[in-house]
Length: 410
Image (cartoon, rainbow, N blue to C red; front, side, top):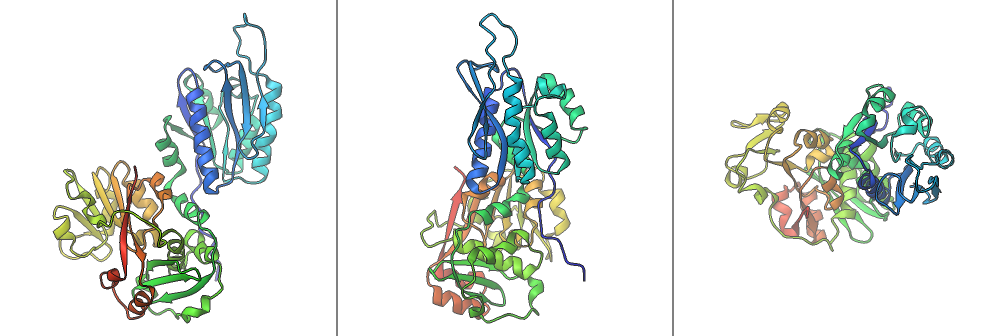
């Protein structure tokens, strides 16, 4: 049997933020975006520009800053007050290029280059390093002034994405497939006490008492289930890894439960409202992905999509037809475990999206990927919850052993 390669996000086309005259706000945008990715644990390399003095592209002092190390490279060339030429010092740019070569060699998760400008348009500056990153398939993010768009398109061979100068556009380019790695990077390691696998739900418990849940995939009913204690001593992060990189359905679901053991801790707070009620007042089209109990009572006008549709429900292929243009979308947290969530988020662009269910990770990390509201579960009575899951309880039957928490993007 041929071994499957680990799950990995699809390749990204080089991204270029397009702007008009002046680029100081673009420099700040790229700086904030790369800093946030670094904070979350992604390996980011490359250069951002920081100007000091006047606010134009030829400020009194211009530095290229290595985002991996914080080292600053001066690129100002002092030509005198009467000079009309841009004062970028090619020697400073050449020295800074070492940050890009190192990022390529280390295969960073993202390489950022402050801009594709006059030097690069003529095959100089950082052009060689940018081409090296592209040829290696490493995601590359830069900016380009409107006067150089034709040169950029020629440089990238037409294989590039032009982005608007806002954070939402950058996150959309980064893509919802990367939310899995993002969730994994946020997990602080802990020791696993047990993994309880019932007929319908999976529970992961750490030795610190943190609990995470995920729905058991329907196709795993015949799989052999080890004793709950057989996972004792495992690393929580190692148990969660298949959620980001595996293909086995049961392993992914256990991984999602492990993620939730970190994020859905007992200290998690938020309104105890049902996520299905978030869009009750929506005037436009509401689409629900998943067969939630009492959905007709809560959202009578909703168009419901199910893998195994009942009368009045749409089949799964209807996602590509109904989600675009919807005002609001509610999707089951099972979409995270079965790996359809990135597709659903891409199709729901512009909609108010709510992720609902006990398997929902309660973390603001998901907001930047196009989710507005998270409605998940925090366990409280652990012994009763374990007994219920081992007894094959449905989510409705074990709700009394914890509380729902809803987080919304501010």
